[in-house]
Length: 171
Image 1 (cartoon, rainbow, N blue to C red):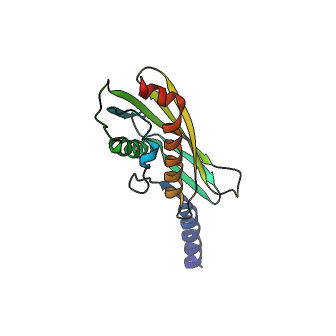
Image 2: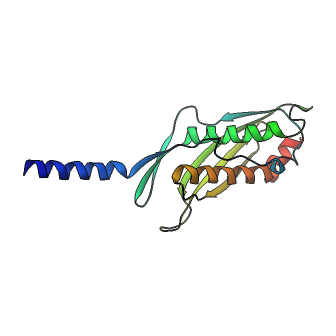
Image 3: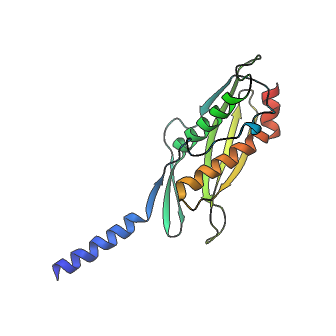
């Protein structure tokens, strides 16, 4: 009887713990295409993370609870954008260096359950005080990590086409 009870407790514990996962994104999974930055003038761009320390957020997408580390996800976005901007011909161009502070926030399900996918908001604060905010949706059958990477890629592509971002880069 004690063995059966211990087995039940172990199964319930495993089930509860197994339904919570920390999302880990990587800049190596996806990349911004060269066409997405080809319209920008060559500039040196300093990219920074708007989170001074890790900021976790939890949200539920049944049957899972996802733990999102927003600083880590922003670091992924920064690296993806840095790589794309470096590939822009003349990336070390003339003109003053630009500063962009990024912040990934509001991770959420893309729609009501059972709609697949996730969404994020990407805030960009520019060195001149102007700003832009874009959203990105993503879905991957390979899990939450890849879904958030797809959402980051989508948001970064939207940022690169955002009129506020383009105007700042051209000043």
